[in-house]
Length: 305
Image 1 (tube, rainbow, N blue to C red):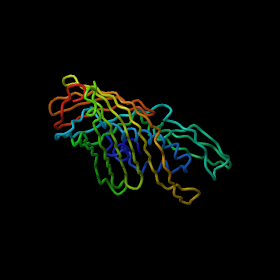
Image 2 (tube, rainbow, N blue to C red; image 1 turned 60 degrees about the vertical axis):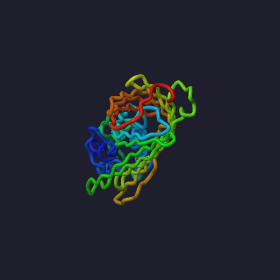
Image 3 (cartoon, one colour; image 1 turned 135 degrees about the horizontal axis):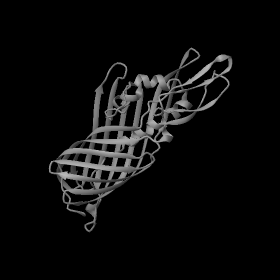
Image 4 (tube, rainbow, N blue to C red; image 1 turned 120 degrees about the vertical axis):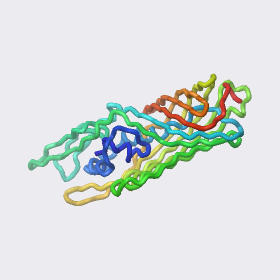
């Protein structure tokens, strides 16, 4: 059941969570549904997964025009699950009759499902969810620069799990460019960013995310405050089989994440070769970000350098 392995196998390496279920159990649950009900059942997972993937991109807006620096770290994100993400209105599917609608759990909803009674003593069973209150995630990240005020970003992992799950792969490529280098009197450091990511779990889940953003920050001693505005998108493709009246049919669809604009507020603590940060992102799907990194990086003194 997805409840504890969804983070390890569905959210991937993305996953530091309390869920404990395998992806094939998720397929058993959503496999009860055709495309319409299935999309509503899985939409909250798409929203949360893409929101987490697009987090943790920056911890400061200061990027020098030249000079070598790098940071290797782990970006952690936690997305709270709202009450509106735990239920949806589902409709019984043919050949069950008569058609009925019920309020039932989503993938994050209660473990107890629901049922409807039909003609001739037939019963239609709606699956439960996995009672998830919040979804954590974690991704490794390498940042390296700088050439003409530009630094590159890499996120990568590839892990073989088992024959049921298959291979878990995450690839993220991005870049950030200093804007404040063009404004010698800027009171804050400014940067612009781009990040593309792809995440797959065997043949079950195929997700992609895209983020464009701008950031501003100002440093005082070892403390840096930062703010960012991002325009983002993401999709989650699902493929599974549904059994209807003794026959098996393929079901596939693409879910678009709800987030489109994200406002992030945070702070970074710079302790020599160790950097710690925490932030909060306001969006259709809010997220909390925490992370750490080790390496060498330039230290802004406040304002454009």
